[in-house]
Length: 106
Image 1 (cartoon, rainbow, N blue to C red):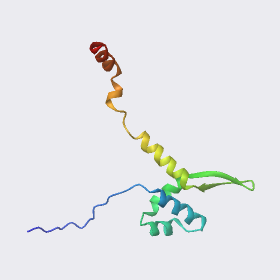
Image 2 (image 1 turned 90 degrees about the vertical axis):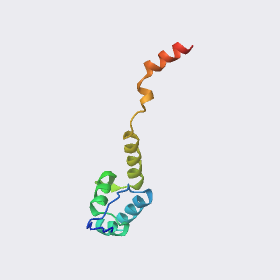
Image 3 (image 1 turned 120 degrees about the vertical axis):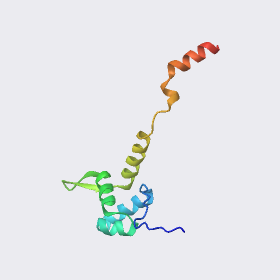
Image 4 (image 1 turned 60 degrees about the vertical axis):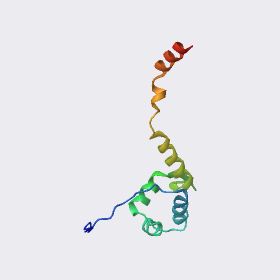
């Protein structure tokens, strides 16, 4: 007698893909709001707003400095953050031990 009375759905969050970042960039260039972009991508508006804030670069045009979103900048920052989030392998932390093993074997 299996009855699922759960009223909440399980959410599985995923990182934005390169294609989604390109769509955000083209949407901004076409004047779409972050709400419209989020609705099209099936994402939260706050996710889109955070991505725009993270990957916007100051640009000077006609003497006026404004922030411009670039998908490549967003993807590069995402990849850098993923690399920094990984732990150093344990084997690299015990160089003295490995040197002693090498000495004993040789």
